Image (cartoon, rainbow, N blue to C red; front, top):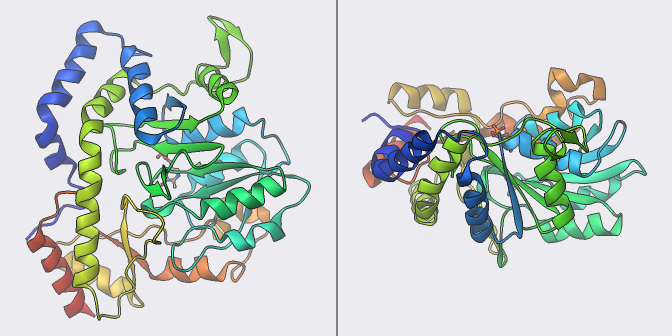
Length: 365
Ligand SMILES: Cc1ncc(COP(=O)(O)O)c(C=O)c1O
């Protein structure tokens, strides 16, 4: 049996007619930049996520930069975030000359521990970027509460969690600003780079739309120092074809996750836990094991691809050495990064494939 990790090929085959038709429409009109699909997609994304405004942009990384620029984050400002995430989350903070200040994670959800945020707040702190890792929203009520108390903005890095539900709202609509990514392997992916920012604040939305096109409020009149951060019209066309299927795919991903968890019960594997008041869109199904390298090797021999998200927490990355963190600073993030491992996850994984993966894990253990 040969297992596909994200199976984008099968997904394309399923929706091929709609995707091809939508792309063809753009090609026929040749309006590749800011074509009408962009505003249509923004409307549909808002309907889906529940936010008032969305700004489609070039990537999840662009979405984060647009948010920080919109909030006027500057040199020497401090932004609190998690060390257990993809580099982009903290990279964008440093890129703008601000300082990432890390806070350890919760051992159950792997998201930032809201109880440890307050002790890191100084008079330079301007915002918190929390990350809804692997598809599960963070403890947003607690994070918003501490942020409000100290007059901080909250950006949810929802690159992995678009579509997840927290209490009665969707990820991306849970704080001042939500950012997502449409990278192909994300739960809702396009066929290249793509992303979006969400907010209920009209002034922020207008500013981010201007920042997306080099800060211009009219053609060749530049109000802000901005970026070229537009989403390609063709990528919007792909997303418009895929979005109507997304709810169904989320349900299928959840079924796959439940089957994995059941199949791995009563083993030494720590399976993921989703809190009762929220759902996950399962960007990853990540387990924890003590002997990860051996297990990955054995699974590879059985043609089962695996991945590690992420092998080194950000406070120990070379690029952040100037911040002066050292090993032992964030014990949970460090422990989890040594044990975590993602299994193949896509809506189309068959029962026999899940059983095959679970059987190989059990025999390798
Ligand atoms: C948590 C997180 N933040 C930000 C990003 C950046 O998104 P993109 O690759 O679309 O720039 C990613 C993508 O992997 C991510 O997982």
